[in-house]
Image: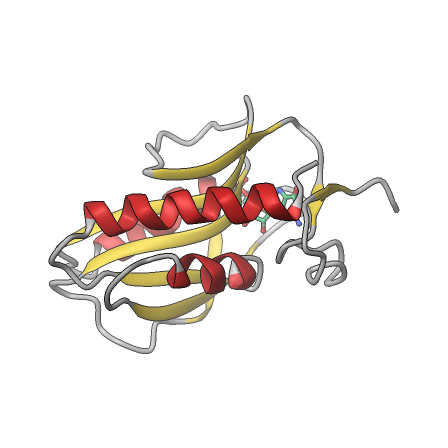
Length: 167
Ligand code: 5GP
């Protein structure tokens, strides 16, 4: 669906955009484990100047491939984000409920600002009311794998994004 070189080019653009928007600030990138690991590793290297990195691990209750919006924090931030400019980095936004929850969760920790960044956004499925600041690609309504995204923990190491057609 999306090739390695298309991803590289878009990640470079997002890094430049964040560099410009964050001029003079040191943002904290908060990657959402595990799906955003590959994306955040590439994205942070496309940002010029200092950045801090932290991670949250979450699990959504309910079905495996559908979000309910009820999110359980499995691993919290290592460092305080009060007074900091936070950028939440997600792999994919479907309903938007996970990112919405995480945005509110982060906003409750007195940061200077919270922005949201996602590599992928599925078209036409967002029910949550949330503006996303940085979007890599809008994709059609297929379940996708690769570049960090899994199907039952597999395929995260693919260098490209593919539609998952397996069982
Ligand atoms: P939302 O809360 O926006 O409905 O769901 C977002 C979460 O669902 C993502 O962080 C991801 O964990 C999972 N998800 C949604 N669509 C896909 C997909 O196509 N592939 C994979 N691997 N995970 C997905």
